[in-house]
Figure 1 (cartoon, rainbow over the protein chains, first blue to last red):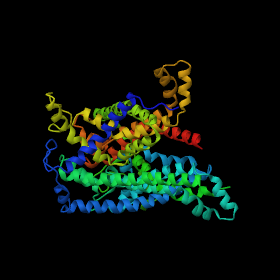
Figure 2 (cartoon, rainbow over the protein chains, first blue to last red):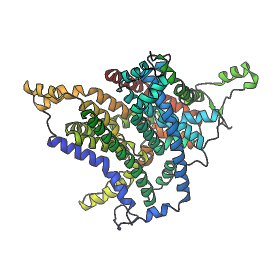
Figure 3 (cartoon, rainbow over the protein chains, first blue to last red):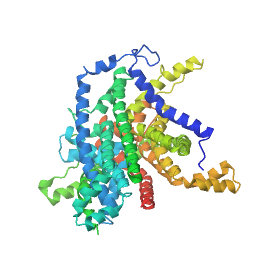
Figure 4 (cartoon, helix red, strand yellow):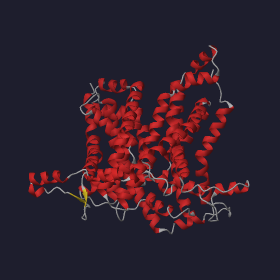
Length: 268
Length: 296
């Protein structure tokens, strides 16, 4: 028998989640506040959102961020999935230790160091800093996250299925495409989403890798935030939070639906 | 049989060699260079036109000058030490808040558990910048916290731009990184062990300390490392919430680079930071490898 949560569990959960969510909830509330002051509720208003539409610099930054995110997440997903396959199925190939080291290191590397290192590379290669250098930098940062997510799915996936496909005459590539990929696809998709949000959120690495003409949304927000709290920034932040929240919620519902579907299939 | 699958490593391996390993060699090389009034702002440069002689002259031009400067500057030693202090305190506090949370989550019924898990993951996916920014409105002198204290008839607090604000920001931002591995370790614990301990006469507190906590240690270690390592190099939090009194090394690198444009010095600061973090990073990788072996 499993013991239910005690009063101590309930208190620590309430306090913990309140701490985690109070600032986010406040930020969303402020974005709909007609008053500029955080301590005065001036009534519900969407005027700050309307104001955003005429902020051309902000819209430009959002467009840059969106393009960087889509492109870098897609390339990172391909590279990260390949890396995960090598880690899970490659056995101990030559350079295995170095390879897995390079996969795991970016996960804990301070962003400032990674940004500085990438910038020095771009300078040494004489790349003009801008859209492409930010995209390259974000691909490098996020491919590790994709690799970890896909890898954790691959190691729980029954290898015998792949082997059965090959015994039935499928080439390894075909077995991968028609057996493995459909099975790990949710993880690949999750990896893509994670890569996209990381790219959407990144300030430090983008600041190092970017140049004139390629200001990303976080860079734009950062330069405004330094001047203090403004309702317009609250509105931008609320939109970003809403995008991420929608993604995470759709994702968990899809996972639930999938496992419910799998359970039904198993019962039928 | 699937040995050729190692070939899948080729493309990502090449990518990481160029965009991850090579840049670190460049940081190392730059930290041995000198500042110069040129584009790019450092010397020596390799003069390829002179062949081997140019390469030799290049290596002769490298020195430890920037490290000497770094060692002589009290400010940087202080910044390293205060980063380590901030990170250690932040990790400890995150563990103190995160452990009861993860423990409580593991105790809930499965349906509620997955909802709570989603609620922990959501901030994990939300921008650091945004979440740190939200605290400015709470902590500033005319912010929400002081308005609340005023209602209670208490004295207002000066929190924004102080080390306390940085500490709050660190704990807040990294809390999900602590809760997730802790929850993973606590959730799969065998409940019958606790029943056995109770049957043998252990009080709930005693069985927690002698059964639950030791079994959750891998999660504790993973969570602490996942918080501590990036906290040491944190930039956004001390920059937005800290004042001149809250030195952190990530911010020093940023300033050296963007404000002073001393690239070699910034590189030397980064190399020293990296060397400081190598032990915890290796520990984290070993922990990951062990967890992987346990899973397969």
